[in-house]
Length: 335
Image (cartoon, rainbow, N blue to C red; front, side, top):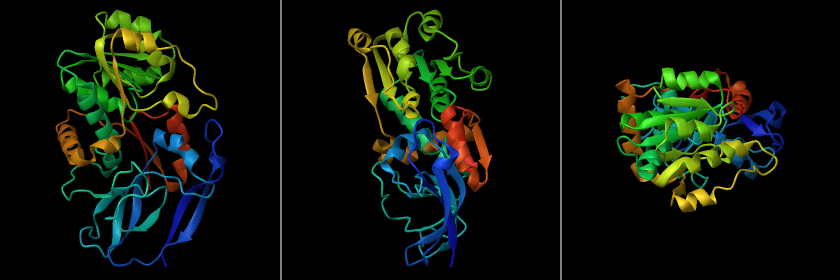
């Protein structure tokens, strides 16, 4: 009988998660039935949304999350042994599943078999060639609608989504300005990712900085953070500016509602278009984004930085560190 390890919620988070909020358990896996596969985790993802959605879990529930896994036993012809899949399997070391079955969670993306000619690190299926990449691609291009010469501002610019948004904007001929949470991240954005400007939002007056480097105003603001930073950016936008809203990292670890300066006068006066989105809205066009991003990666036009932790047991530490902003680019755990 095959066994698996899984990481479950030991107790609900109060503020910043702690390692003792998690517990490792073992379980016996069922036999593989017709139409099912047994796969072993290769890479697991840690993402900000997991903090926001943890409130829906009960103590003892397996922590949700995506992973890239190697198929080691198969009774499903479409998913053969030796291939890799990516799916919403949770924090588990091994899983028996029917990969053709729709995902159990609303908004989750279906299990996908990675192409045999993938030709990129498998971990990228959790980052630039997965949900973060598709979020960056469609969120910017479909909702932000950047044009050549536009000024694009990105918050959380050194994270999994933000670092890709800035590069996609640069590929499309835009002036790119990023905000991140440390001087190290600012250097990375400017020196390696070639952002035109980057600032440490902890030590910089964001509104004053934007008035200096984008005096004519901002066309697109890709918001991963929310809070006071966004309240500073919106008054700097041009009339009719577009604001795709991908997340609100500033609030995820807060036990109290985050207070920020009122933004409605800027939104109304400039007739800004603010639109939140879930990446699942683009499921029918998923492969379009992944293939375009994959070509950019292989051509060297897209830099994919990963912060890799090692070992299944490192998942809670990697998750906590990601929420603190310790990562550059995508945070993943290699099993």
